[in-house]
Image (cartoon, rainbow, N blue to C red; front, side, top):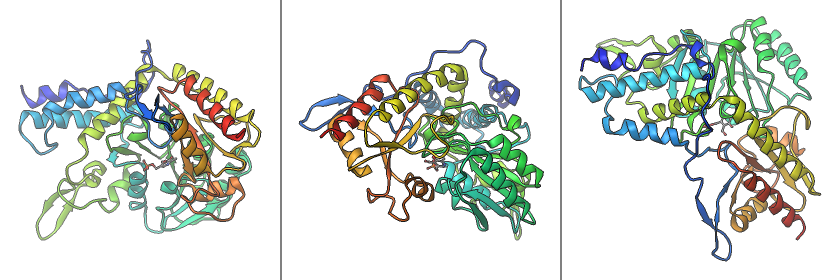
Length: 429
Ligand SMILES: Cc1ncc(COP(=O)(O)O)c(C=O)c1O
């Protein structure tokens, strides 16, 4: 079989093909749905995984895609052998799939990274000299910290205030500017007005990076329609826990920025002078890339697109409404929210329980009820402190922190009800 045959067997897809499949498939299963874990007394119970916002379980089609790719697994981009060419074709097809999944423009770069943190840091290294970043204190540290020069904005009291504050901050900055904002908060799940923020950014000649780590597992994102410049997200939160993430967006800054890693693959030639690739993908993906991670990420994109968002969103909203109203019915339990009960959100709920530290709650949920949640400040220290009204407190010390329950594909009503009843039991002790 010729090289041509291999490449033509996996044709590139365009952003227009990102539309949901006409007939959607059933919601795929996740691995580990039948996992049993020990609780106090030695009993085994089915694990209630309510920690999807940290890392989601692997989708079955993702595992199948990785298993299918393994027998021919080989080096990419450099080998003449058949397996090498097939693996290269699969890796490059993964790029097209991701591009289509986020509705990117045909000429946008799609760079595979390790995760969202890696993607934001990559972009930070490519900003034109003197760029000022505008970022809200509500961000995850991955989007808050990588910037050399930034203006930090206080958590806005309502969505329109976010747009107004960004507008005012960007108006006062000369030179290149970048607005960084999350699409869905990893603390409250609340959705941010990214279309309006993109509009404001562009009005001031700025660009916008959207941290979509918590959005893409729950909602469809269309970079072109929203007029975003960059998006970043992680495979392990998108049911593809094989160590890949991605940065998608405009090529020019990425083509001129310092290569993220310096080494093989990023250079065209090395003599007395070094000629670096101008194409952002090879320029920033030196060394052997995480091929299986990219294949897994693309398989997750395909599986979600094939399922269609309507059913996924409907089921998530049903479960999250049940969880929130259950928790709200317990005295002493307070849900964290920036913009109020009715603001749209993805499947994430953070809360505190009077009389207990978040760590105590999380430990009881795990050891007595077989429930996995996250506790702490969720790597969003300024935001959680703001929501709790605290001035200090470490990330892991169990005080000045909250419990976070998060759901996704594979979450069940029984998991949600078990959590609510466990918290109720705890409060009544
Ligand atoms: C909104 C948001 N951004 C960025 C990150 C960082 O993701 P990663 O740890 O995969 O780099 C997270 C992880 O929790 C997140 O929730």
